[in-house]
Length: 386
Length: 167
Image (cartoon, rainbow over all chains, first blue to last red; front, side, top):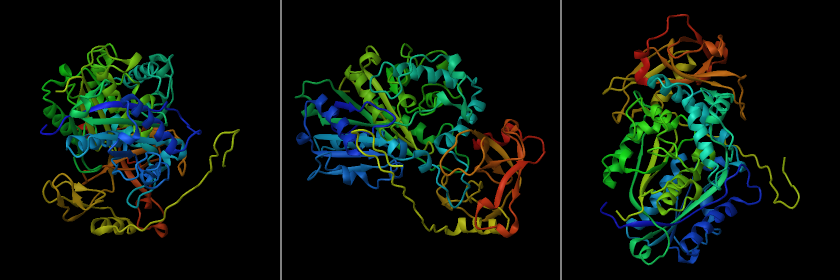
């Protein structure tokens, strides 16, 4: 990549849940940080710089929380960098932290992302009136459901595909102690009986609202080589963005996502992603985005993503497991969700994913998207340095 | 609404609000001024020749150029896609369930969201032709809310090919 190597040496996350009334935002963030540092065998005193991210401040109503959180992160006298890219922020924050290391400027960087949804009202914050439109959207579900309808029509996908993805993710989540929802008894039949919230999106096809935080410790190669802990080497990172609205925009498979994936694979030396990547943690807040992203990321041909789902390709036992952690569909502290994807990808190649470990995972993808499917952040991490 | 349960930390309810002024810029000024007169104005990109309604930012993001001439569009249009909303949320003013549709006005090439009424939610479909129902003229302001909702126009549905590129 023309850059210095960077390794993830510690992944930490909270036990995600709907209401963490026992802690403030500062306490929530610190919990994830302490777990990441413990995994790395480090303390806050070892850290050179801190990169922090969360989704829009309006979600909790705390403006610029990074300033307040410097105390909780023992960041006085150190560089603190805040990243904003809506729902993709957990991913792009991890990328900015990795770049702090890859640039050679810092050797030991801590990154953390969070959302405490119970402190605010995300649905309200995402449905504010604008001077040029009418307030008919009902949160993120109201925004994405027409795009899902477009995908269904364009691809000819049968109506049960979304429920299949949901049952898979909720079942996987039962193997992940940090996941918000632990619901072992879903069947496809029961899933299809859940009510339509934002028709064509059913209740089970929708992510929960979660309180949670995630943190990663990343270090330079010379530091990593002295450490006796599992490591995930950052093989490549990529980010792309595009406007929410422009004439002729492909909202089902945004060009920015396709370009981001192409750039990611090129930098990682990957020519056949389906064959070369062992496991993916992909941002799927509404289950139908799994087949949509299978196509956008170049794993499946256009209009064929749903066939991969139907054939079990993305099951934990399939050729390309998607979200063995249970994914965003089982845990959604919005700002942290991207970093959880990146951290879970790292845990897979570090061999630390416990019951949801994919055997032999050597190369993994972390993915996040945000806004109106317009901000993309992705990385490839591997068990090997290259 | 503040909560103190047992020895748990206190949770205090603190509502916040924001009032702001928005400078519309030239393209949105045309658009909003048109709405005040009950007319629908978009703008055409001089490169791709596609018409933006609303012409929100005054630029075509495909071509990276300022939008050009003002173009009157609609008032009829086609539903390209839609959502049936069954979820109550804070600040909501519309009775559930309702249809929030993406509508592409005749002569325009960009969808915008609006309500569909005067038919059952289950009757709404992609390609359905619709027309606006306006408020009383005395209530018109610089707002798309001058249109109360769209209703079926009764014309035959538009073929999928007509709007597929706008999905």
